[in-house]
Amino acid sequence: MTKKKGMSWAVIIILIMGFGAGFLANDYLNNRLNISIPIEKSMPVNAGNFTTRYAEINVVAVTEDGKGLIGRANIELVSGKGRILVNTNPFIEADTQFSAEMAVSYAMNYTNIEFNEYDTIVSFNMSGTDSRGQVVGGPSAGAALTIAAIAVLENKRVRNDVAATGTIEPDGYVGHVGGVFEKAAASGEAGMKIFLVPEGQGKFVYYEKNVTIERRGPFQVRRVQYVPVNVDLSNYTMTEWNMATYEMTKVEDALAYVLE
Image (cartoon, rainbow, N blue to C red; front, side, top):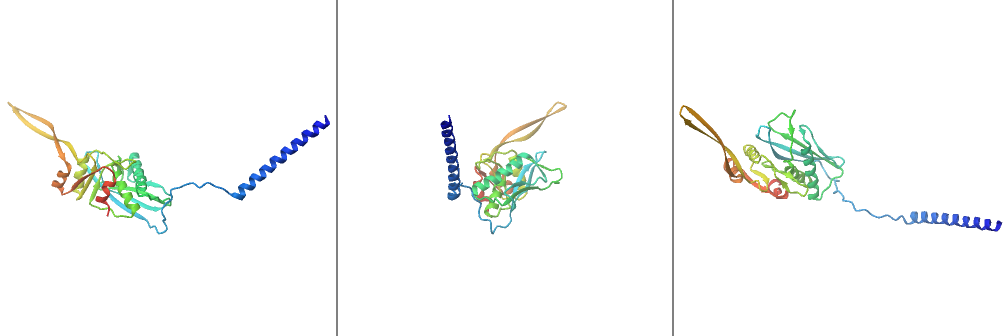
């Protein structure tokens, strides 16, 4: 029994010594070799000589009573933490805020420029209305915001005689919007020279109100009909306001018309 106990203690001591030696060897190798695996990261451009940038672009909307309204969207790049901030005065609905964030994100992907040390601030100024209680809603300014964001990132100027309407998709395609005719009228009356619309919305059917009055004996019968009229928006805006209308499939199609 004594001999067996002595052998057991010897085996335990050997195991403890082996474990300790392995631990020390592993710690030594880690500190000695200091091996690490590099991780690829998208790096921002060198912003050492950067100054605050600012761009404005015309945006159009339709009011609750069906009238076209033109205003300005502003995008500013300032010192910050890489955030996309939307000014909510006037009040901005959630879909408009989401559209603004998508516009800036796509602009960064398109230009391959990322400012991690700067904030992008998006704000709206809709003319002809009191900003108190005003609500800006809908994603139809997405394409215009993307153009302005590209202008800010590439430090280019935006023409002030161009208006654009259309949503922005994650892949840069411009989506359809409502109220194109009303928006065209607001742009033409404001003196715009170019009006940009999504692909396929340069021609549409407009229902024109037609009133006729018939006399039947001592009575008059008033008939109201809405007659479909095929409208080529490019011809119409050029005739009415000397404003050219162009379609855009992707937001890149608009850059040649808007940026200087």
